[in-house]
Length: 265
Image 1 (cartoon, rainbow, N blue to C red):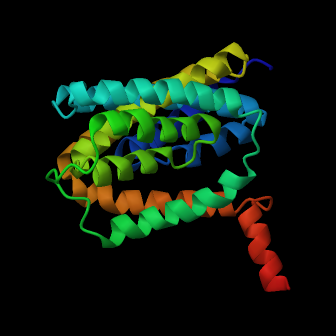
Image 2: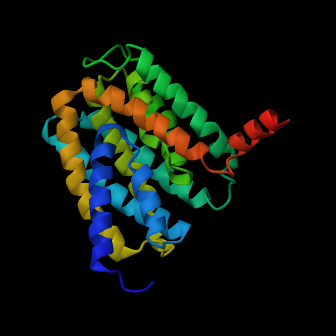
């Protein structure tokens, strides 16, 4: 790749900072960063690898911010994070072996269901609720499932972690957000390892965006801690819908093609 212009680095830094703030609150920062990387001239694989680098810095940054406020229960969080990291690496290893077409059709539906769920239900509260699943089962099955998805496909992984923490472990809005960021960081780092070994990370761009994502995540996490569920709930709904629309906007999305066939037929 040709030397990267400082103006491009500055622009991508700003995009990553904004995306990092969104990601720290409700996820979905990739809606901004991946298109920006593609517009900058990166091929799709390099765009995904570079995006994993900046996203990892953002999720680590927000995790540190939440941890400083004592919002992460490490005894619970570390087994979940470890499982997510290993599963994220496994997902990235399998990404070239499995077709993403099924996930591209299924994920928009799941994201819209999540948007409706958090928009209409009372599940996302400030206080913790009753535990519905034991930690060993959650860390052994639920976290690896989402982590594997994050490694193999990715969009909406934060929303899936969020709904799992809220509905299965009974976490309140802020605590669920904090633990989601740690799990996201773990599965991001797991899959990032493979992208690095494949040489799919454009380091000058990735590090500039990583700096922006780190700073943006600090701002976003502070906003989340200040406003709690009042901010997290609506933004989670909006970002879930936006991710679903983004996936369906792809003309190659099999669900879109099926709907077009039904309407046209």
